[in-house]
Length: 199
Image (tube, rainbow, N blue to C red; front, side, top):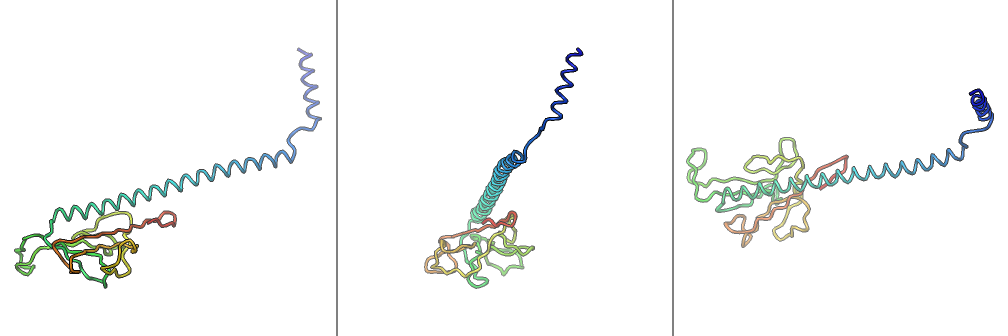
C-alpha cells in the first residue's frame, strides 16, 4: 500500500510542475464554433416562432372572414328580401345595403303606415372608432379590423382593381335597388402582430 501512495504522490508532483490547460488558440476556436452553433439554433427558433405567428394570424383572418360572410348569407336567407337597395352614403363608397322584407307591413305608429320593414348590412365605425360589419345595427364581433373603402367605387369599376372592403349591388339598368341582381361583397381584414400588419 505504501508503494501505491508513493507512486500517486510522485504523479501529483509531476502534474503540478508540468504545464497543463488549454491554449488561447484552443479557447478562441471553441468560442467561435460555439457562437456559430448558437447562431444557427437562435435563427431556427426565431424563424419557427415567426412562421407560427404568421400562420396563426392568417388562420384567424380566414376564420373571421368566413364568420362575416356566413353572417351575411344567414341574414339574406333569414330575411328573404323582396328588394335590395344600395345606400349612397359618404359619396359613392358602397359600404351598405338595405334588405326589404317581402310583403310585411309594419303595424306600429313609429313607422309610416304601410311601408315595408327593412334591415341593413353595413361596414361602418364601431364605438371604438374602428370599422366593423354591422347587421341591423348589431356589430359582428371579431378581433380583426375591417378595412373600410376610402375611395369611391364606380359601378363599372372591377372589384379586382379595388383593395378595400365594399358591399356593391349590381342591378340591371344601373338602378340603386332591385329585386333581382348581383350582390358583390369584398371584405379586407387587418390584424397586427409585433408591429407587422397582416391583411
